[in-house]
Image (cartoon, rainbow, N blue to C red; front, side, top):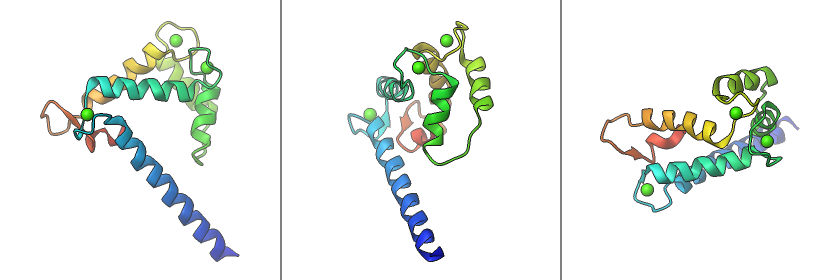
Length: 127
Ligand SMILES: [Ca+2]
Ligand SMILES: [Ca+2]
Ligand SMILES: [Ca+2]
């Protein structure tokens, strides 16, 4: 029984990694190996839509929690409440699209590790 569980866990890990890999490449929509500003903003908009499950144009702490819990990790609502306090510049209690993109663009700009002025697919791995 234990062995079956172990194999099952390995299979899940493999599937999760493959999905992560596939999603990295979907950021580079023109396939030139680099993620342009337009490409990353398009990607962030897709991510925002995925997270905003009730489609009220804002991501709540509950929506963050359910999205990240489904990956199989254990998170707590307090962590996301703190995240929203940091990102919620118009203080409506949720993270709107502009707030979401603004915050994520900071990470995008910092991702150019070799300072060639472009973000490669590898550099965009953790965005
Ligand atoms: Ca590209
Ligand atoms: Ca929402
Ligand atoms: Ca807000």
